[in-house]
Figure: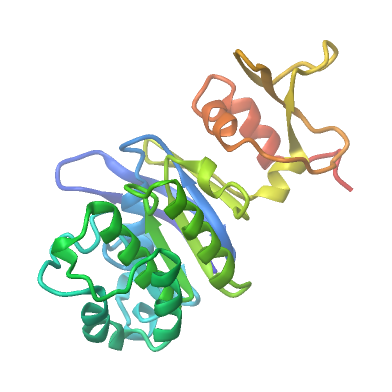
Length: 284
């Protein structure tokens, strides 16, 4: 579990990249959404212990990550979008042989399976691989580390359609009820069937962190809403009208992540967040 208690961080002479963020993120696979510059990568760095919050507490499984305790760091891994860019003369297997000694949960069998799923042997020199294949190698290795907390920054960037499907299968296979995975991405459609929770950043503010089940018990996502339904937010395209309405019966529905993200960056955001974060009288 990740507990954020009023954490803030500012870069030198700049505005706050993360401002007084508080949330509890339970095990499962979570989307981290936000526009470019929203503070998503900074938040991941704070969770990984790569940055120290200037105020507040980032607690991961009982450890204050600002202290960079080795016992904590071996259970958390952050995979940046630029992973392996500086590793050129070796293969992912030789890199793993050096690096994985810091992670007691690493599984070479899992690495074999992940690489095979991506159609790689793992013996290819990284500098000879395309950007997409280096990303496959990096994602395979990150999953194989078996850390309790896995933080992925744009893991699907550079992956083709089949590779994205392979990553989806691997996350479903290796993320159990004890692991927490946070994925910062703009391509939410690729992972829509795996997501347990959503965390949203906007201009350094953490707007919300909730499970998908809790979100869809409070608001509903509908196509071509009835004239009697007053939408909180709606969009129109050639396929019809797509809207978010208040869920008055408390029955969970499917979530449209793209619509939800757009709504939270629109004038409707304040009303939607109020419904999401206030005790809902329609829930039993």
